[in-house]
Amino acid sequence: ALAQREFTQYFPQPGWVEHDAEEIWRSQLDVAREALRKSGIAAQHIAAIGITNQRETAILWDRRTGKPVHNAIVWQDRRTSTMCDDLRAAGHEADITARTGLLLDPYFSATKLRWMLDHVPQARERAEHGELAFGTVDAWLIWKLTGGRLHVTDASNASRTLLYNIHRQEWDDTLLALFDIPRAVLPEVRSNSEVYAQTDAQWFGIPIAITGSAGDQQAATFGQACLSPGMA
Image (tube, rainbow, N blue to C red; front, side, top):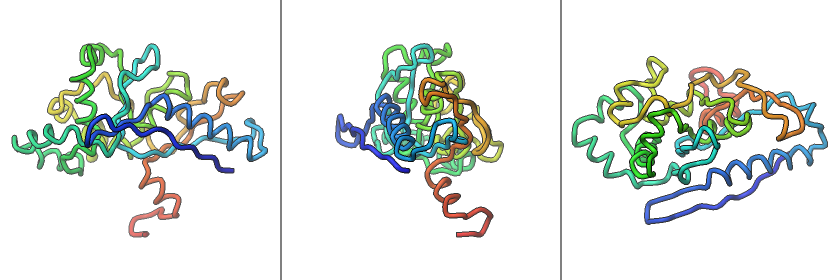
């Protein structure tokens, strides 16, 4: 069975694109329940939940309340172009690319997160004290599905933040310092396929295992059975 639903796109200024993270969560929970009803299958017969998402959208939320402190800043958003230009002019792009495999561009999550830390009142101080959590949409959905018990992302999403060293496969302290991002705000990075956690029973009547997470292009490649190097 399949269910889908549109959610609101916000354009507060030219070049700015935002989503309501709570609306993303509600829409995904609603369509999951709808697909379950359409299928005629009981929740106890669902083996596992997998998540895929557009990768670079940045969400920052309160660990205690689970409420976002700002609208999600979407991958299309260009508000941090000047920040990227300044870092490029200072000669940082080559090192960033060497560590992350990415170009220095507002498309990716790091400057979006930096913008929220700099512009949301008290956000930076609260982030440094471990009170706030950052994630792309995968991390946000896993957090919500587990009732705030688990703050994780997967490597395919982490690798699009400009903060993840793809050679060492870990958050990069040099990049965190360059973008002025406190490590305390970041999720743990996990593999694409493992049992992350069980959902809270309140969402589907029983706990269901969450066992997969992959960003959009990687998930699509896997879905097309491109399973080894050289396949296309």
